[in-house]
Length: 267
Image 1 (cartoon, rainbow, N blue to C red):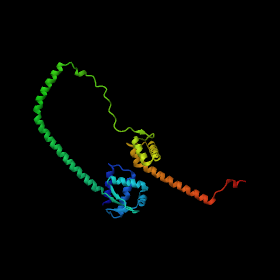
Image 2 (cartoon, rainbow, N blue to C red):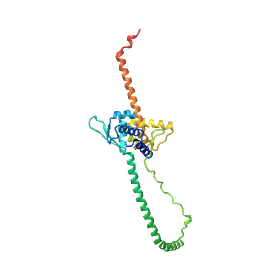
Image 3 (cartoon, rainbow, N blue to C red):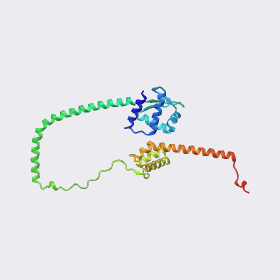
Image 4 (cartoon, rainbow, N blue to C red):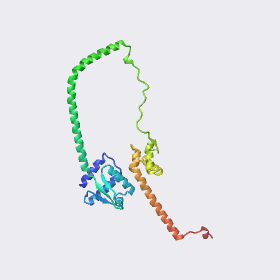
């Protein structure tokens, strides 16, 4: 496997297939690991190693890993016990070659169909030209006679009214913050997957970001799934780590000073 060729193919693929940053950094970490292993068809790497290389936590790595497999960029499988997972990198250059070959065959078939249709059209036109000429003469004569027998004024026909407007497709979006909108179904999906409190925090983060940067997304729901969830998870990890340090300091204070009564220090 050629490392540089795979990198170029990966970024060519990204131009038409947007991917969140968790998946991108995980793909790079797996490529680097496979390179150090000598480009084996299958290789193993521990999650803790991937955490160090990507800066992601375990949950974010698992989500990104499943996404890469769905897109056909990697294959992986679990092993029993505490053994590391087994990974396989899918060569992107071969994937593009197969896709381009399929497109060429489909394009050739389509061109052949167009040529055949053109031949058939020319043949039919020669046969139908004389028939249409006679038929048109008869139809025009009948139409003129019918108009003469009626009092219909074709040039002053009133417009058609009371036509119901076309219904808009898709479910209407609802505003959940000043700059964040999504359908109720999308909001419920987030609540079912992450919980009410976590979802509200994601909406708050995205609302602040869009309000400050003037950023617009075609789908706020997709933006939350792509990067806001990871941002909030990292925020909560830092908060838990900070609370853990504060609890340690409180325990150290109790060991030094013990429990005391403020009245014991009064004059």
